[in-house]
Length: 164
Length: 315
Image (cartoon, rainbow over all chains, first blue to last red; front, side, top):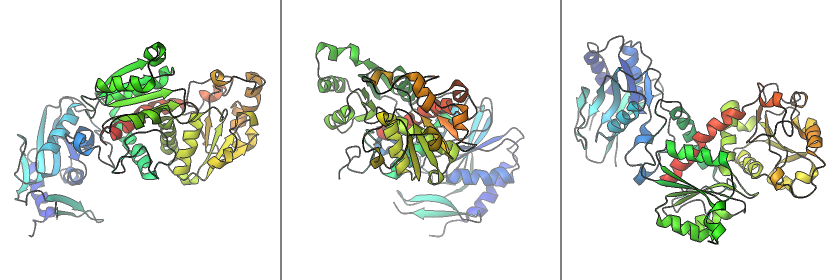
């Protein structure tokens, strides 16, 4: 199956987000694909608050089953979270568990005024009551297969499907 | 050969010694620790990984400092921590080591942090406990102190980046030092080309060269051009016989002073596992000087112990 072009979806998201952002809007990308997407959106939208990145490994709910992920990256939130409006960015929304973990982690930095979820693709199969406020496309993907974002050497974004 | 620290999947299930540990496991611990450094600088210095787990600190030998760092690390992972100072409790009433461990396992301990004067005590406990329990060696006799070796490696990597270009000198009481053994093992595993030990003959183990080090009885020669100087504590409490004429004489030949440090590289770092004996193995002006990274070692030590506990707890 041919997946939509990630670059086009990304450009659509920029258009959707432009009326929403202000000089105070902060953005946080979830490692790894979400951070790539956030880097792009942050630049295109010309956001003033420096970009944050989260690695949610320390907040995953499957730690007791799967252990700690290898190559954990450091989370960096280079702004005050307290009372901030935050756009939380991930590449693909699937079960909602990653977003739950990311919100838990954000709250350990402070109490944000609001969090809105931005995703490139919504797979529409939620296991938690979480939904995106800004979404590039809703796609149906075979259960168990992993849809993820790739970034090549030139910085081009593309969607890729890995069989389970 | 089966490594008793690894489970059937090759994951780290216990941390008993760094000797023979695969390089990728050590690098993974150091990388994970780097992520925990950020956690310890946040408003909320806790993550929920070990929520609902119980960590028992079994200290058969006193060490307030080491016990405290493990306690802080476990609490920052949201574990419940129970400290047992066994030298003053059940064993004094005659209970055996393994009976103590069985009793604590029946209280649903998930992890044991063990400090013992006998080499091999943590190994014995690791062989004894069930597959869902994890053991960390927090120092056994003269044998090993793996988390100290890891935090030393973390500190060196933080300041010097690449082990394959480094010259590291370990100075002082090598004979009684599990810290030195663990550090030498990890430096070798990470590919450090030059590891030197500087000590009088009486404070060197026999056949120390077999650990992969060069021996320098003269401190000024040994420090020539090194990138890292690791001072060891002169272990008065382990010094039964007449290994040294006097502490003053030791300081004269093996104490780190500014003029001896001057022959090392200009950007050399000075480390010490603590607690320091100022004026015996290290001069105050060096301990508090610009080359010293002794206090950052303590900070990194918490992150390294968090990394070890979170990796074991998920195995």
